[in-house]
Amino acid sequence: MFSKILIANRGEIAVRIIRACREMGIATVAVYSQADKNALHVSMADESYCIGGAQVADSYLNMAAILEVAVVSGAQAIHPGYGLLSENAKFVSLCEQCNIEFIGPSSRMIERLGDKDEARKTMREAGVPVTPGSDVIDDIDSAREKAAEIGFPLLVKARSGGGGRGIRRVDKIEDFDNAFLSAKAEAQSAFGDGAVYMEKFLSPVKHIEMQLLADKYGNVVCLGERECSVQRKNQKLIEESPSPAITPDIRKKMMEAAVKAAKAVNYENAGTVEFLLDADKNFYFMEMNTRLQVEHPVTEMVTGLDIVQWQIRIASGSKLTITQDRVFMHGNAIECRINAEDPDNDFRPGCGRIEFIHVPGGPCVRFDTAIYQDYEIPPYYDSMIGKLIVQARSRELAIRKMKMALSELTINGIKHNRDLHIDILSDPAFVSGTYTTGFMAERKEKNHQ
Image (tube, rainbow, N blue to C red; front, side, top):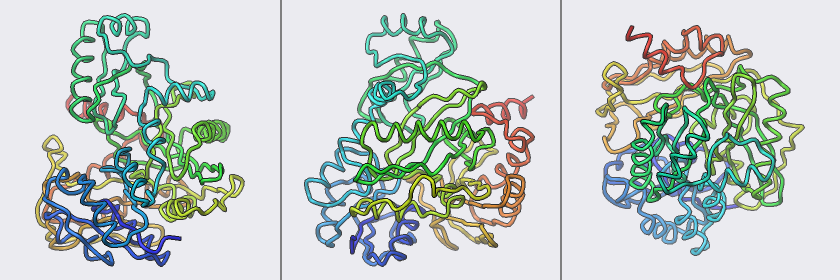
């Protein structure tokens, strides 16, 4: 087991990893930007090092500075959290060259699955259902012909990256050229790779993901699903487990497909296979995320397992002691992402000083955050400032508990989206569990009528 781990991240996920390490008796090393000198993860870690300026390119994406701190501090491993360098194959390769364990899959695995075109091909060969579409196409004339063959509506999607960037929906052939070229341009700017492919746009659909753990010895377990269909501009807002749309039979088939996907590439560490589920209960592979997900606490709440600690154990060479027949989902869990943004003003991101904060409590209520009273939220980073998670015996009780917890959550001094979550949880489509990925767009349209 490692004796010291460097956390190459910031905010709530850095705090989350530090807490997991403390429980395991592992010393921690934090890195931070000049803008984050007063951040909670800086004071919580056993050692902290400033690695650059406020911009992520100068600090949290500064690979050389992070690796230098790892060497100087004697850290044996690096946990990347999510975002930033968590799926950067070059950084993982540098860790491998420096004999520093990267807590996640290998650089080759990240490259292979980060290339969504190659991942689709691999899954098809493994017998995992894949959304109808195309391979990568560079020539616009060929792409136009293929688009007509696939049929509209369709999605033009970047081969690399994620986070909703490099994606364009096309409803008719007249709009295709502009969407194709703009998707390529955005993908090139965001990921340094302008390659795109196409998928049939399936609607209505639910976004379902399966959480996996895989060790270095070929053992893979699936920890069940998370429903992630409440999204705004391809960014998740609320997640829950189990999904209200999944029957035991479908769950079994999706879990088997997820495990098959992991074994097809000899996957290691924590990973997530994302599927689309259509109205006829057919499911299709969308992508595989080779990192810890923002919404991992939902699975932790229903299984009682600490996914971060298992990531660390697997990276250190431990075998999984969890077997598939010993994975149980208890009750229902819901997570709401609390963002520093103004829903009444086109979700404009906010920053500023936290004048007052009160965090809800009680059994099975968890608030993962890095903010505190008088903390100054910097304007340089992601708008998410916390994740509120609850668990209860049933979905009805979980919704009720989440609404109570949200009502109790008080954050003064900045704009945030707490009230939006309360409204969503009261929406008949959410309460019934029939909501799909078009839910937020449909709510917006209704509100403007």
